[in-house]
Length: 269
Image (cartoon, rainbow, N blue to C red; front, side, top):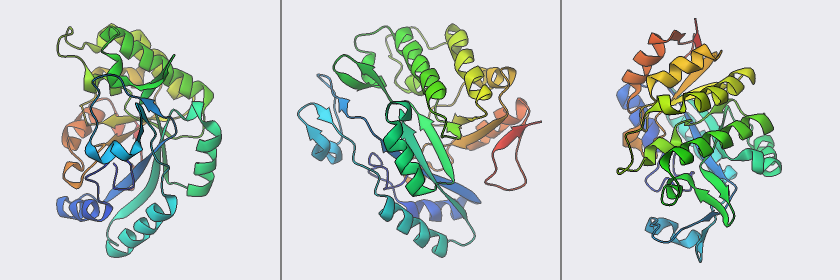
């Protein structure tokens, strides 16, 4: 999940999230803060929160660097205040294969417990554009296939991560006027990515922001996937662990089991 140290988590709070974890009986959590290296080109009609306005230069939004010192100090305070919690450090690297030098420098400095890699934007002639905006001028199927192709490229070109985040990210923004989303239409595309991920020895994230379709977990196992992890992708304390009961049932149904410790990845049996 994310806290106020992720630039886009305007309602985030690490301390309030830890208090929420204690309240609901969650024994461990990881704050995998965003590290976005690419500027995004906003398209006509794009709306952004008021809290992001200072990041704009014309139509270009440049995410700020992760305040590593502030983040680590906040982690120390929370670990002292909530000794009953196992609080892991983490980072979510956006498109690290296109920014490998900066990503590598951050990993050396951060010494994170969890390293996620993700794709949020796709390259265009005018620059990187958030996946959600691409639905305006591309067929929905083309957006999903383009996203998965970029995820495959990331796996092939960048190895310094442990977990692939939100493999189904484009589904969050699936157009209401398109045919209903059907993962079987993209089975071959998903399987290619999952096969490469398994071959690289990485874990697949079950992200509950929009529930991951069970077929993707089935394909993950069939393609040789050995480990999964759970992410509510929460950007505020209230959303912590949202949908985890259902995600756990799905993971168990496909043969994944918890480890000895709450912070362990789940592995296939």
